[in-house]
Length: 156
Picture 1 (cartoon, rainbow, N blue to C red):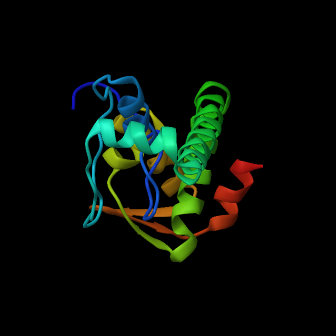
Picture 2 (spheres, one colour; picture 1 turned 30 degrees about the vertical axis):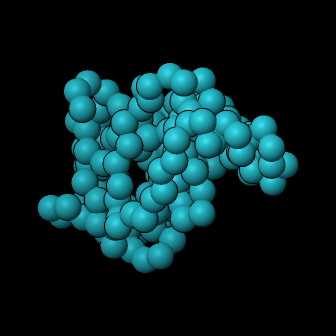
């Protein structure tokens, strides 16, 4: 991976990747890069089989079109965020969402930058500002949420 990148979406168990589905339908190679964050059990099948299922099976068509609609809607919201929301507000919301399971987030500035579509240096600078305000504490490979209210105020 070189240059800037952004996480378009994540694929959870029981879901499929929109980019892969569109590439199967169109016959094009995938323009995207995927990274597994956990152990993955996946299934592969020939394009001809997939196209036959789309043509013949209503349940497969509904599943695929449902995935397409959901992902396109999500990516439109992402474009709106990137284009129109301040990055400090987006970062605060991101940290709060990732911190729903606890106050300690094990993640790198690079991973956050990729998820938010910005440079690592920008994320590091903003996190340092959050640390000076007392909202977070920074450690090597982790972030501790100290004062969620400070981050919540940025998301309003």
